[in-house]
Image (tube, rainbow, N blue to C red; front, side, top):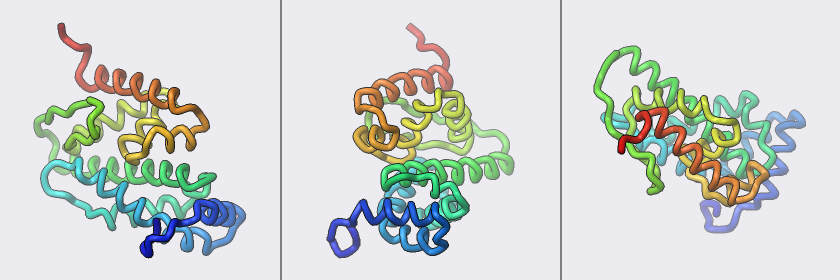
Length: 193
């Protein structure tokens, strides 16, 4: 839905993505207003996980991610869902870079316990936790990594993720279970009996 309540044409988003890939310099600028509310929702969801004082607001995160998207990353998208998945990844990269800067400045700190349950899956993360999670995500198989990025960072539903990756929803759910198990072991070690 756009600001006026009318449904935004997914076809228009796809058309603008194609135009941007074809070299239209204004296509990305025309695209962003069509997906801006979705981008702010994704940014807000990611920022709610930060522990302590926030270093960034959703608008800032959207703008930082847009810089990455406008420099070519967003041009790879084939449709709206794929674009939002790429945007979620760009936001993850911005937050990880920010966490690295903050962690380098602080050095140290205690781990905060986070959960890898199936709830909203929105634990609060310290910079150190976010960096550890990022390293663990990078070790996943590519499709599982995309599922985690779309679901955890992008807040996307299984149906949207399946559409983006060109797989079934069942495959997405299976990849999510495997990825969660891997991330849990990677972050906390094997479960104790």
